[in-house]
Length: 333
Ligand code: CP
Ligand code: NVA
Image (cartoon, rainbow, N blue to C red; front, top):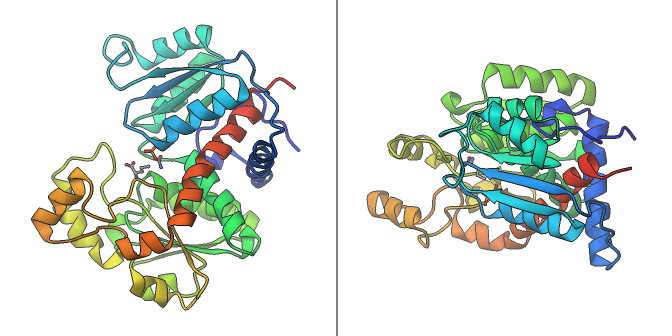
C-alpha cells in the first residue's frame, strides 16, 4: 500500500483508486478496533487547527471526536473569531498555522483556499467542505454502502438526485468514478456537473470501469439503482433568493416513495449527507412550508424515517473515515 503520510486531502481526484480504497479499508479497521475496545492512539500529542468559515454539526464533531480518540488536540476557529481573511490573508494564515499546528482542517468557500493552505503551510490540509468538493463525505458514504449493500462497490449503482453540481454532487461523481461504480447524476440539465468535472470523472472511469450517466429523466436514472442519494437544494453560501427557482426546478427530483419504487429494487437504500429538510421542524423547513405548502423538500419524511438507520450510520461514519484520513496522513510510521 502506498503511504499517504504527509499528504493533504483536498479532493477525491488527487488520489488513485488504490489510495482511496486504502482509506476505506483503514476506516473499517479503525471502526472495528474502537468497537472491540482495542483502539491505539496514533496521533498522541499532535495539534490540529479546525477552520470553519461555514457552519457544521457533523464534520466538526467528527474531527474533534476522532482527534480525541487518537490523542490529538484540536483548536476550533469559528467563522468570526479569528483574523483569518479579515485582517490576515489565507497565505499568511497558512504560514502562521504551519508553525503552530501539525495539520489543518478547512471548511469554507473556494477550493483555492484549501489549495493555498496546503501549498503554504507545509503540513497536511484536510478539506472539510468547499463550494466545489466534499471528499470526507464521500469516504463516509462509501464505507456506509460497503456496510449496507451486499456487493463490491464496482457492482453498485448509485443515483444522485438534486443539485448535481454542488460540492456533494461533484464528490459523489468523482468518488464513484474512482471506485468503478455505476453513477447516475439525475438533475435538470442546468444543474448538471460542469463539463470540466464530468471530463475528469470520465478520465478516471476509463481506468476503473465506472459507468457515468447524466440525465434529467428520473425514471431512467433510478432504474435498477442500489442507492438513491440526495442533498439540500440550496447549499451554504448561496443567496436566499435562489430558493424559489431551485424548488421549482428540483421538486420533480424529490426522493419519495415513488422514486424508491421506480428503482425496481426492493433492497434499495436512500442516503443523505445531512442536514435534511424532511419535515417542518427546522426554521428553513417551516419558512418554505409557509411559502409553498411543501412539508418536505429533497426527501420526504416517509422515506427519511424508513431509511433512518442507513442515514445515521452514514453520519457516524463521518467520524471513522475522518479518523482514517487523519491517521493515514499524520501518524508517524
Ligand atoms: N454532512 C455534513 O457535512 O454535515 P455538517 O454540515 O453538519 O458538517
Ligand atoms: N451541499 C451542502 C452540503 C452540506 C453538508 C452545502 O454545501 O450546504
